[in-house]
Image (cartoon, rainbow, N blue to C red; front, side):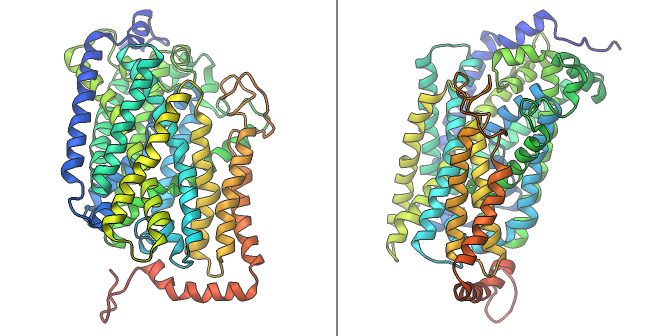
Length: 555
């Protein structure tokens, strides 16, 4: 067989950027059907009684497979599908390393944090941190950091919705795009407020099955176009990138700064540590009924994420090989449409009805990914507000009152987020994604590691970690090249870039750990010894789980 041409022919390039009326009509019908069916499923599976365990954890009734699919669904967000796919298509090797870092992050959660989190937590991050340091100050601070970590990522995914649907459905106009953002926002808030943990878990399961199934089919089509030879695919991608072999080496993504290697290490640290500790991911560990189940759940989740990394790598390289890097960057400078362009290019210039149906499944899976991801984040924020802030004001808040607070909190979080997303949808939003991961890595990761494993860790050290780590990221992030000083930054017309990296992790992650250590030292030896005794009282619970009375058998 003849080798594929190095660049996409003109008719294919035109086809992949103009999906045609048939595909657009099918996509619109599929979107409407999915929105209707998933909302109905949330109503059917949502809590029908004023039961906090049912709303927050779904009675811990999910099997390891279903819980693992839900964890993978939460972990693979729209930012991962679109953003990471774009980095792979535009930067090649650097994008693949970034994708592998996401899988490594979930493995870190599985091997180090999952079981202690499940044992120490009940509903929220505040429960985990307050296990050994009770008090409203800890809970309120944990809620504030939860909001600071998740709101930026919600904004990114909501703001991208209008542009994504406009690209798929072929319409233009700011008012139509804003309308899409508002409609999607209403659906997401409804999922969180009505469905609770079981409802959003079900949506995540449907989403991950559709995403992996359609993505695997597209990846196989891409490989088939290159005679099932990955080497031929990589060579064609290097030619289509316009930069040759540099596409297959490190440097394209981070080469614009003076310290490219350190910048890459900083980004990987932020993704690995931050991704493992974001609250909408850790809350899924509380839904496992036993330590063994949480391990099995995460095994399934890691398998799904690794499979998706393979899929997105093949589709991303296929997009560059078949369409060309210039076309991808022309459609979106950040490459957010690369996954769609690669999927469409794999079908060729002439598309059959079956192939149109496959492409519709791909677009519907992405649509559902946006819905499910933001719904899970809204739920995590709403749970923290209701349980850690409002309900903790009263020692015995009734379940009915707390569930009402949780649903109102979903509105409180969701409505301003949707309105703000509609205002910023035309800006480069990569700094917001990075902000979420950096807060997770610089504030939440040190707080969790110290709280779960350091006996002398004090309340002062915990508050210093959470507050100091978050503030450090908020102070340093505006000085990065993602915000200003570069053509692809959020404010390309300005230049207040003073920090020579794209992420803050290289500075703020060590600072977060140092602040916790210094805060503990500042508490004094007597306070540290008191905290050590308090930790020892719950150490076996945190590390090994609760023990049944009399039998000594771990739950």
